[in-house]
Amino acid sequence: MENNHHDDELQHNGDDTLLARWLAGELSPEDLEALRNLEGYPDYVEMLHALEGMEMEEYSPTLAWQKLAAELAVQKEIGSSTVDSGLSEPTESETTEAIPEVSAIEPKPEVKIVEIAQPSQAPTIINRKPQIISRKWLAIAAALLIGVVGIWWFSSSDDNFRFTDTAYQTKVGENKEVKLPDGSVVTLNAMTKLGFAAADWQEGRKVALDGEAFFKAKKGKTFTVSTEQGSVEVVGTIFNVYARGEELEVKCSEGKVQVTNPEGTERVLLKAGEQVAVLRGKMQRREGVSFYPKWFKGESTFRSAPLARVFGEMERQYGVKVLADSLGERTFSGKFVNTDLKKAVKMVCDPMKLNCEIRGDTIFVH
Amino acid sequence: MKTALTEKTLPRFFNQTKLCEKKQKAQPSTCKFQHNCTFAIMDSLPQKNVCHEPTYRELFYAHARHLRNFLYYKGANGNEADDLAQEAFLRLWRDCSKVPFEKAKSYLFAVAGNLFLDEKKHEQVVLRFQRQAVPQEATEETPHFDLETKELQDRLELAIAQLPENQRVVFLMNRMDKMKYAEIATYLDLSVKAVEKRMHLALVELRQILKGI
Image (cartoon, rainbow over all chains, first blue to last red; front, side, top):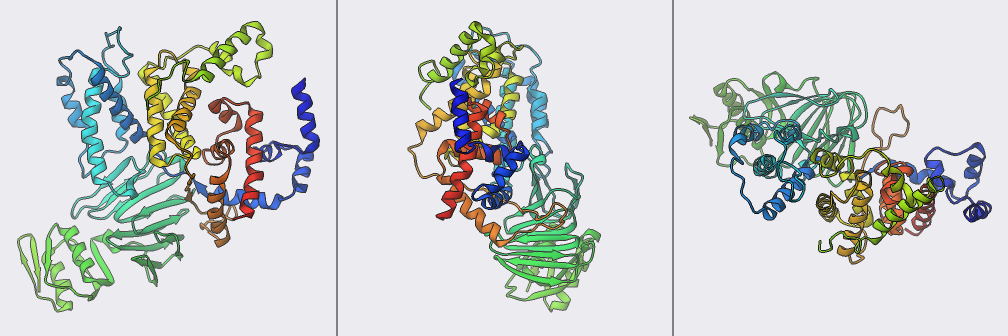
């Protein structure tokens, strides 16, 4: 009764939950009238609109769970006095299987762990602390942490990949097609790493990229490609992203693409057929983009590209090492084939009047 | 990281539970909508065992992110929030036989809140949020930022950090984690009405603070 009385009083003085109920979409027509007469109503609308575009940083429950499981395993080790034999033998094959190669980290590593996590035998110890996970699992968890997480953290120590739980990486001269959870398709050029958070995909389409890839993003919510050199945002379109070293280059084949520098101070909107290069935070817009990038068809093309980048691409396509005296600031416009090293070297060195020499896996440039 | 969870360290949690159980026995009907009784009502449902590993993992996947964000909203920085959330889960495991499944999430938030109090010396709260394009119209195909929105977002970040902690937490759980008021109420062991009030106040306060920035 007292409560009701109190509420009534507040009602007279002004509704103290009006804005809350407005946000929840629970207002009656009278309430809405009151809302519109409320002082600062336009301010609230504007505030909430701006808030729509603000989000919490990405969070990977999978990684957090792995950390927690490892911590529990450690505590367990300290807490238990008996040593259980047969702890590792039956699990060894599974363990090695579960550790993905660095070159192609399996998608959804957590799925594997989950499968193994089901204890095959019920734990028999009753007197001690609860058995979270069978000993077998603990052994695997420990092994996995050294394996999966170790590899993971060392290979993607850069912040850009921090939110991801799934990654693909291509080797020298390799192209790979990756399907994302929403059906978008990404083709990776050689020596490229792509990562995303499969567990959090529903909360936002976001991938991390180091290298070069061609994206066919399905229509839908904002699709973000995060690179160390800046970020690329689209809704649904086809585009190519090159992000290596200090350079970011985005070519838009279809639709519209927004590119932002790492500081977020500069952004540019690309239409189909346009491209932008971001070099050390500076943006340069150009025109003329073919629908499919040439690397897609076994060619590497360049337009006023620094020679270092051209030879870098050659190294990635052929797995060779290019040793050059000094390339200076010279730039190259043209292409080389990705299937024949001799031809490729000729295609670059001849027009540039460079003296190039192939010795095994090394190319000497004078 | 020093205090164990006992009736001494978390009297509120345990006392309310007991209080509820008593009330529930005496007058089940009156108890129903009083927030400190939610535990008692839920007790009557069939229970899952927190000590059961898949159940524990399920709890982790369901609440870890919210818990971590909750700590961040309180004012822990990213790493602290990660660590404190993990510590809360470790304690849940340690006390799993004492915590019924239904109480697990409010237990986690209560423990995490206490851990935060132990750790933090009321430093300046700093909050950072990721920015996303705000579509001007639902049909618009291209992401569109306008400078004013961007500026307002910067000011909002500062203003939110200045909100009283309890308003800020509720406000961000709703706006950032997209949790419903009823959901927030169960996490924080509050009544829905209390959540709504904090939410309303947070907006009013925010507008005032923004004027000064």
